[in-house]
Amino acid sequence: MTTVEIEIRHARRDEAAEVADVIAHAFSSMDQTRWLVPDASARRAVLAGDFQILVEHAMEHGTVYRAGEQAVAVWVDRTKDVPEPADYERRLAEACGEYAERFVTLDELFEAHHPADPHQHLAMLAVRPEAQGMGLGAVLLRHHHAILDEAGVDAYLEASDPANRKLYLRHGYADLGEPFALPGAEPFFPMWRPAGATAAG
Picture 1 (cartoon, rainbow, N blue to C red):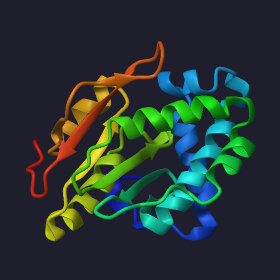
Picture 2 (cartoon, rainbow, N blue to C red; picture 1 turned 90 degrees about the vertical axis):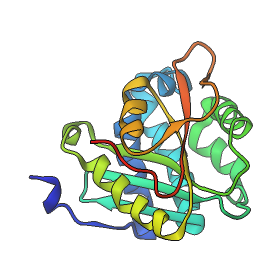
Picture 3 (cartoon, one colour; picture 1 turned 90 degrees about the horizontal axis):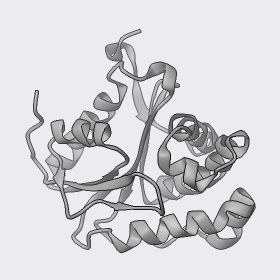
Picture 4 (tube, rainbow, N blue to C red; picture 1 turned 180 degrees about the horizontal axis):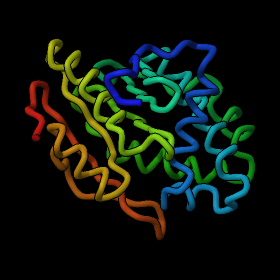
């Protein structure tokens, strides 16, 4: 299978749980998610519960793409005011249980470093581990960047590690301020892509 054979389409509302599981599968080995859910046996399910809230929110206030069954991109439109997810505290407590406060810490950390200028936020870009290295993430990036460039809209994201940072640098992003981190975890790298930025390579 090659990336040219993969159809990029908008995720349907009834696919939110599937999209969340793709992200949880891809993110379960990240240093930051190990801090969020130290119990490896519970991590994927807890992450999926949290991510489903965020995916459903992005479906209302942004765009969620699927590339086949293996990769997803979750964008939130921050060119306008975006409310927090409805009934968020209760839903977060139900989804994350004893780990809910750790997710609140992450939310507060992200919000404290989020830029105020209008933009679209790439909240999550995820590829299932068995499909990584095929270029699916790059295809999803290029697809939405073309839309943003036509509209003259900038983009923002938090890269989760140095390797991901290098990927985003190749797609026209640049560092925005200093990295920030959860307690004892690897840092996130805030990054900004002006509309029309040229990708490298």
